[in-house]
Amino acid sequence: MMADAEKAVELLREGKVVAVPTETVYGLAADALNPQAIARVFEIKNRPADNPLICHFNQIGQISSYVKNIPDSTLKLMQHLTPGPVSFMLDLSEDSPLQFATCGSAQVIVRIPDHPLLLEIIERLDHPVAAPSANTSGKVSPTSAQMVAEDLGVKVDAIVDGGECRVGIESTILDARNAHEVIILRHGNIGEKEIRDVLPAAMVRDVKPGERGVTPGSKYRHYAPDTQIFGADSFKAVAHERKIALLLTQESLDAIDVREREKFVNHQNVFVVLGSVKDLNDLARKFYSSISGVDRLDVTQAFFLRADLGDSSLAKALQTRLDKIISH
Ligand code: TXA
Ligand code: MG
Image 1 (cartoon, protein in one colour):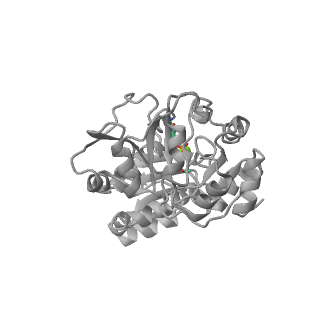
Image 2 (cartoon, helix red, strand yellow):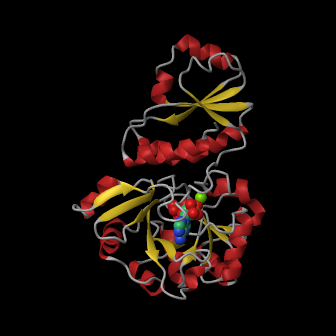
Image 3 (cartoon, protein in one colour):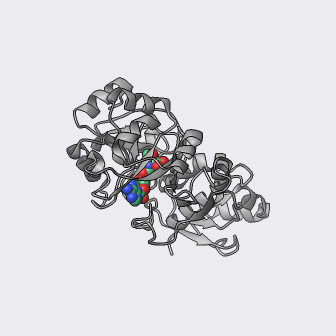
């Protein structure tokens, strides 16, 4: 069933689970204060019960009553970067009702998403909304209502269609509880540069494996479409294959001789152009739909032609997703 914001709020109040748009990827939303609704999110996603959910708020003021405090660095970053594609780790207050969403962890990850429909839903509900990405565990995140419907279909009580996600990959997750350093727990569109613009003196670094308990995304290592995707270091390495999809950047495609390309396609292979390295925002926006689209092609397996995406935060974010998608 499709729902507008008003209907979604009604359903969330009844403890139902609704897929909602955000600027990053679609989320599978439940009232964050309702343990039964949260349990259903885990069931629908087939998500391991110890993997906590991000809690979404519509403004900074709403967060304060659920957490111990909002440290200065976190507050500054929130003021400058939210609503936006970035989430923050905070310490829960004692007996916080968010402990169900966090699976009993003493920390919560909070986010103020930049999507008018979800902000409206949270405001009307007047509770935070717990929402992991709206995909079956192990699959890629959905970036359109249609992708949600294809994966979860009737399992969800409703889907709110907010169009295609503007960013296309999951939010950056930061631990900025400490005044001196900001730890990147998960790479995303917001990176070191944006953080330094707000906190010029802070040290910004990647999380070390195991350093913050469950590092987002690191516990469950692989996600992918049903078609297996392997890495390829050169076109030559896969040129003789039949019935494969070759995922590559526009630049990689342009570098392949035209006759070689024709021969490849004549052998029932398909090129899947992910986008140009010169426009990673566009590539990121289409990324998950390109990847999951491979399942609809008449191919037996897929390869990704490795490419240097650069060293921007978005490049790092895309590279970490590719590393999880590629089978070894
Ligand atoms: O862009 C996003 O962040 C999307 C949209 C829907 O907001 N959400 C999202 O949620 O990507 P999810 O559940 O697919 O990824 C959240 C990651 C998971 O790897 C989870 O383990 C981690 O964050 N996480 C959530 N709460 C945590 C906590 N309290 N402590 C440690 N890790 C946490
Ligand atoms: Mg996810």
